[in-house]
Image (cartoon, rainbow, N blue to C red; front, side):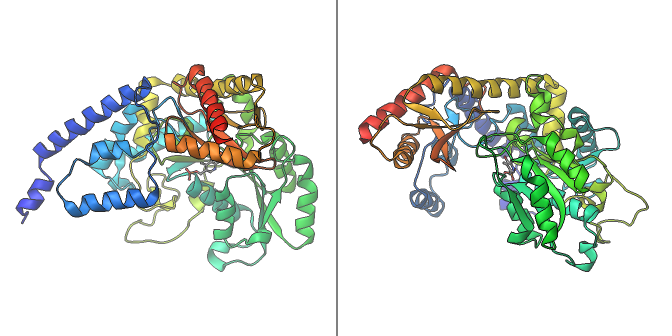
Length: 474
Ligand SMILES: *Cc1c(COP(=O)(O)O)cnc(C)c1O
C-alpha cells in the first residue's frame, strides 16, 4: 500500500508546482546568461567549502531552496564568457527531452523497454552515417560518452582483426594499438583496460603543429612487429583535445589499409565538422574509418552524455559482445538491431536518441552546420585578435574552436608560473572561464569557444583583464 509519504513523492500537483518553478528559474537564467547579465560564469568554491555547505543543508533540513544556491555554485555553460571545457550549451529543447526521458525511464536494453527510442536511435544513426559519407552497409548505436565509445570501438577492432578470439579464449598474443601522443587520455585508458599494457600502446609523436606525424607510422609499426607485437588498430584524432588539431585522416587510412589493421577515428569533439561546408575538409577521409565516435554533448548542443559510435560495416556493431544473458535477451537468429543491450556496453541506458531526433526534426541539419561554422570561425578570429597583441602568443594556429594562448608581456617573469597565476585569478573572479593545458613549450591558457553568443568584445575584454591581472601580479 502506498503510504502518505509515497503519495506525496508521486503527487501530480507537486510535479506541476516544482516543474513550473524550476522551469521559470531556468528560463530566467537562460535569458540572463545569453545577454551576459549574469555577472559570474563560474561561482568557484573550493571543494571543502562546497562540501561543508551542502552537507549542512542536508543535515539542517530546514532550507530546501536548493536551486538558487545550486545555480550560484555551478558553471554557466550558456554564458558568452564561458570558454572552458568542450561541453555544449544545451539547446533548451534537449533539456526538455531529458525531462521526458527521465520521466518515462524506458531502460532501452531490450526492445520492449524502449520501443520508440530504439527505433528513433536507428533512424538518427542512419542519418549520421549518411552525413559522414558511409554507405548503407554501415550502422551503429548511441552510448554513454566518448570514453566508453572508444573502448567499445577498440573491442570491436580486436574482435575483427586480432588472430585469436580474445573474448572466448583470453589474451593469446601481445596485442597493440597505434595512437598519437596527443590523443585523449581515454584511448590510453581503454587500451590498458583491454590488457595491452604500456608496451601495447604505441604512441606516435606529433609534428610541430601537434598533428600525428604520419611519416613515422611505417617504422613504428615495423618496430612493433619485430618486437613480437600484434598491432590491430590505429586511432586518429579529429581533433585532439588539448590543441584542437585534426590528424591527417586520409594518410592514416592509407596506412591502416596497407597494414591490414582497423582504423578508428576519435571524432568526439570535431566529427560534426562534416556538417559545415567550410570545415568539412578537416575530416577528409573520415568515411574510410572502420569506426567513428561523435559526442552529442560537445559540438551538437545536447546534454551530457550521449555519443554515437558508427561502424563502416554495421555487422561489426553486432559482434563485439557475443554473450548470453538469456533472462534478458532471447536467442534470435541473425542480428536483431532492436535489442540494443546486445551491442552496447550498457544494459540500461537513458533514452538519448530523443535529443538527436527532436533536434534534427525541429531545426534540420542547418543547425549543426551553423553551430560548427560559428564556433570554428570564432576560434580563427580569436587567434587573429591574439596575433595583433604584442604581449600575447598563440601556441598554434587553431584548426577548430580550441585556442591555446598565453600572456608573454612580462619579460622577466617565469611564463609558466605567471600564466598559472592568471588562470587561478580568473577562476576566483569567475567573470571569464578559461582552462589550461600543458604543451611542449609549457603552460598555456586554453579557450574552447563553445557558445555562439560569445562576441569579439567579450574576447577583447578577456585580454584586457588578463593584462590587468598580470600587472597586479608583478
Ligand atoms: C571529450 C573527448 C573524449 C571523451 O569523451 P567523453 O564523452 O567525455 O567520455 C574522447 N576523445 C576526445 C577527442 C574528446 O574530445
